[in-house]
Length: 89
Image (tube, rainbow, N blue to C red):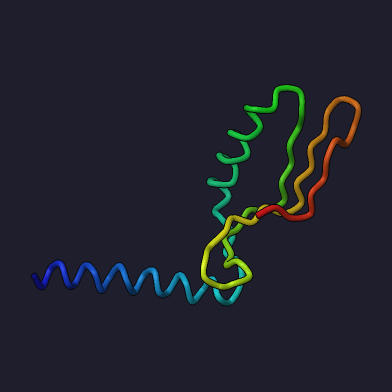
């Protein structure tokens, strides 16, 4: 019983600390994770080139739910710029 309680407390402390950090501002994903996500997105876009400035986790406007925020997204093809988004979430 003590082991289960200790595990519960440890997990609660980790999630609580992460929530407190998110309340101060967005947390960028590690560069290796961003590269993998971009590679997967790029694989689905045969003729287009995708560029993304940053991916981060932030709290939504209610402060209750975490969202993935992608900034400065541009999509280009052989004719030039197809789409540009300053921020997606």
